[in-house]
Amino acid sequence: MSLSGGKSEVISFKVNDSLREAMNGLPNRSDFIRNAVVAALESSCPLCKGTGVLSPRQKKHWDEFAEDHRVKECRQCHEFHLVCDKRSVVRSRHRSKRPRARARG
Image 1 (cartoon, rainbow, N blue to C red):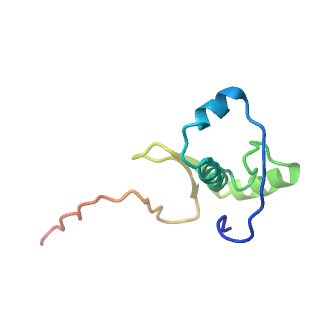
Image 2: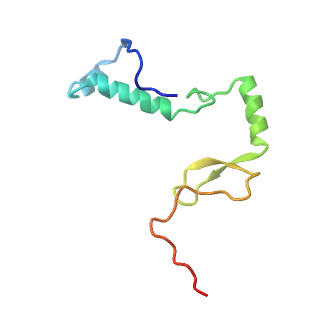
Image 3: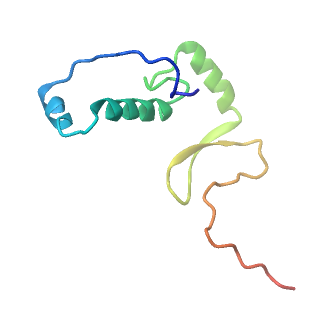
């Protein structure tokens, strides 16, 4: 899903006094708000869309998915991620920046 480009529409919302004061010093509040909303949408759960709750149908799909998947903690960054139990090798995106020395033989 692309969140940039396309037709623009004005959306307004109310803020309390402390948020208004905090935003007063921003050079471009519209850009700041737009970027914050895009960042929040891009990192929300694709199933619940950030609500934290699955519908009964979503829960059924999740249960089927979870039969072959589990949540695991990354040994390097300690963030949780999904792992497919049917994959023979789980590849980590955390790779050493230096190439490993090969054994000579």
